[in-house]
Image 1 (cartoon, rainbow, N blue to C red):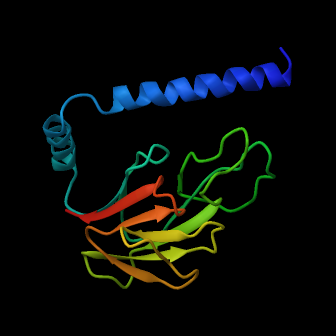
Image 2: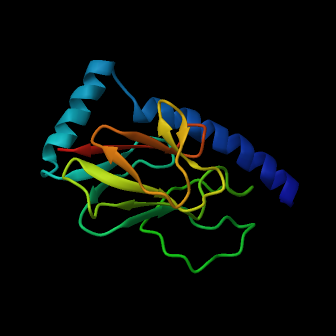
Length: 166
């Protein structure tokens, strides 16, 4: 199989997998999904969490005392860098990255109350955005988020995170 034949096959399979993912990931009614989510959240201890909501970031990240760095791994078309990230958003495909920078943003819980965190965009290429207002976070300038705040890695709202304090 040559590269073009493989690329055609990969493109079709990737599309089919996304469609299957939707039917598998969200079965049942809205009430059933809310009930399952509430049961999952009830199992978490008291504390601060980031909840990944997009197809590339389905994480539940407990926020402790230390900063957390969000980003992605290098695509096959990029040279890996030495930057360390704590949680990787799987946003890079065979064609290259889409929205998430390798080091995109930092969540800093220091100097905040229990219901707050600081969000710092690390000069990402597509920005970190506060939702739903679509307000871009200024790079390197800490933005305080309250529990219930939503932000996106990139402007499309595909890679969403919800900050909550339970």
